[in-house]
Image 1: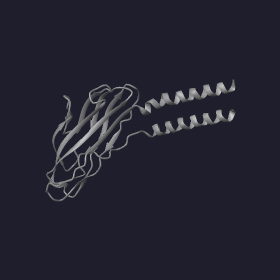
Image 2: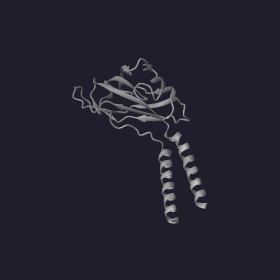
Image 3: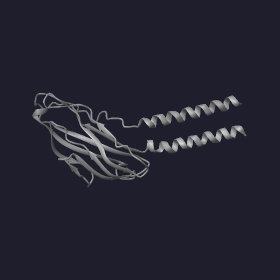
Image 4: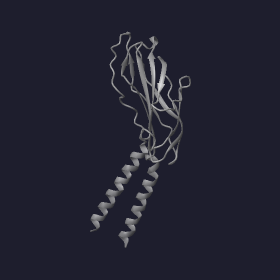
Length: 199
């Protein structure tokens, strides 16, 4: 009878942990990257901002700040969808809604095409993106942010800049997610060890 009480209390604890960790796993991830690591003055460089709905709920009211970094001149944008509400003056992308079932599988990207200006020669540029607003139907949200890999601008103006697709992005997995998973694993191991010793 005592073993049954212990097992029931442990199961209830695990249910509590995973019900609250649902909010940790609910995600509004964001990343930003240049399409190249180096560029020359006069080159075109793309800034790619990607937002991902990792579930379990739907996202709405999404506003993202993705300003054009100093040293780059805005040329145009594309999102691959009809809605392309990016304001190059304010740097705000009005995304709207993002459902898990939406086209692209709960992911939207903004491609900002820019030109490297002469004042950027010899400098290193980074791009930033962050949520200004987002509502998640599954619970509270954290307004995450991201920073791109460095873009190195050479001093000359020839066109031999090397490109390398989207490289590393900021990992936005909350620390609470790792803590909750680790705690759940420790509890399961402790239960298994206890039950083995009781035999």
